[in-house]
Image (cartoon, rainbow, N blue to C red):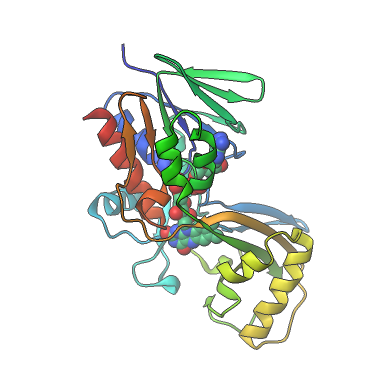
Length: 310
Ligand code: FAD
């Protein structure tokens, strides 16, 4: 009988690992603290008046340079889960109708326990015990596909070497503002400033709605400086910085919300793209091992599945 495998984290890395394990006849179970599919490729929906808006408040677009990822993107594209978005670059793609669409597509093949934060792991001779509050899940092999800071904490006791590698990584934060305006802003679909590292007319992405919806990302420096503000204080500050840098008259949004990504982006990675300890039956993957993009997270997951099954 094949071994039972638990994957903590159903973002791009965890799911690409799961897809490859499945292609090799294995059937992992995934756990994710989020309420639904996305991870950092998240899409937030909001009710505004009688209508609905959606905002991609994490990753904005992805590129596909490695042929293995390009093949996956082509599959999503032909099935309607992704489309090119030239406003972000000639080789840029977005999920459709939201950034989380490729994650949703992959998630449908697996048993995923959503809304469960794994807060401790223990390994005895043949079994991993995963604790989520009062509930314990068991598996013979464990994959940790979560951001570095969270992996460091979770693995500190059972895998100090892997935890030390994760501790060495420092992710940069990002405050994200999601806003709908009544009137069209006199700007192109994307904007880059200083305090505002990136802003995009979300509604200009393929397959979105009609409203004048923007996602505004603060730079890592601005985000770090304002990290501990509550979102209702951070939002108007970031809004003011956006209008000042864009050089247009401030328009109060009809709707606005902010999200603080504490661990948004990692730096360049130069070691192994995934880690596997056959004695412990423990694997680790994620963008922090492979590089700061969606594509890197995907490749890290693939790499880990190859190590586990070779
Ligand atoms: P994640 O997507 O973070 O997935 C990890 C999952 O683990 C999450 O779903 C989380 O809920 C879950 N989790 C964490 N801890 C636990 C726990 N203890 N128990 C259970 N579940 C847990 N990349 C690009 O290519 N282009 C961009 O334009 C871009 N812009 C970005 C902008 C922002 C604001 C952010 C935040 C990221 C951006 N990125 C971008 C980076 C990209 O989103 C990531 O590299 C990629 O999504 C990482 O995938 P992952 O699977 O490694 O991690």
